[in-house]
Image 1 (cartoon, helix red, strand yellow):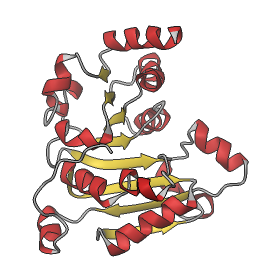
Image 2 (image 1 turned 90 degrees about the vertical axis):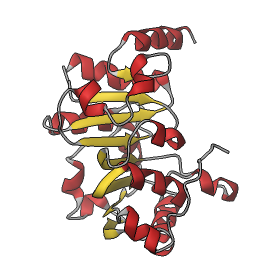
Image 3 (image 1 turned 180 degrees about the vertical axis):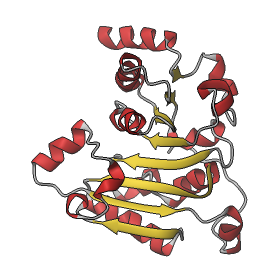
Image 4 (image 1 turned 45 degrees about the vertical axis):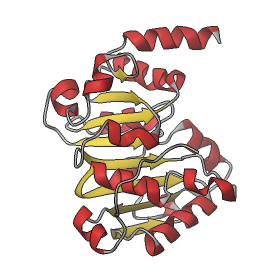
Length: 238
């Protein structure tokens, strides 16, 4: 607990962590490029970034783009923040909030690409609506993403991957969907730039195959025509 408190105190002083109590937390929506990155480069958001390993890994591979890791756990964000500071990654930021609050921090069309890496599979039936690939969350991502923006998803969990494919094929239509149940035996493996989180390394060492998919979002107008987007409703954590 003492270590966590020290990290929370340090987070409060860090410019690359945007969290409650800081001015940018209330002002950042629609102004990430202007107020934080101070450039007009494309923005990629990692959802549920944990320790930020993937966020900083992408930022190192592509210094000409901006990367934001989103997670609620401040002690986890401290890890990614520290790496970014030590490696002088000016194209990285972290946002401490819940995913269902995403629309409070990103304006429509502000994000160029989303990554969802190894989320909690929420295996129980009563938790389906809390899965981060549930249609109610996909609507949030679609509204924050630019037209035809990419969404990329990696997981070790087969039931969650199968559930997500069913959603995309039956409930939330998308464009250019491609997927594999074995990323490292697939011609899609270049998409992840060889970046592995610690968690991914643990599962691959145990022989678990990594599943991966990507797609482009349909436009808001197309989804409304299909009856997918109705009146916007607030997503609340249950």
